[in-house]
Picture: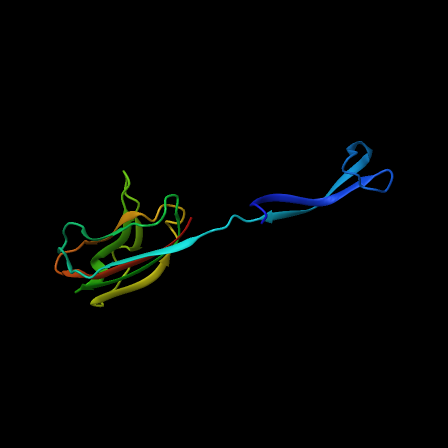
Length: 168
């Protein structure tokens, strides 16, 4: 087994047309030919959880959050991909800001929809891949956050699920 690292493949040319590792003084030139990189072995895994509980979205009110606590990835693991799925029932989705976030002394928001991005359809069903969080630890409490920004309509977060792929 060759350990991970960078190795150089080349030629040693000496004046006697022989290569003698016991006499390096007779080498007249060293030519680097190719670089061989042996990658570090990477282990991968996936964390998954869901929240099936209805979370009310107040009409023109406070932020509604559905949370998932994901843990179990080894220390030093980093996210390579997040797959997000959610369902929101609302009488006017165009009123909504919808984002995924986590907190580690500061909020790290990734907006999926801003106010007026959506029309008047009564339900929002989203499935997509997010690469915004690549490189951070997957062991977090994740929040799907929703805020209704106009009066006259209401709804709820019906379902929230995350799959987080990571490597270590």
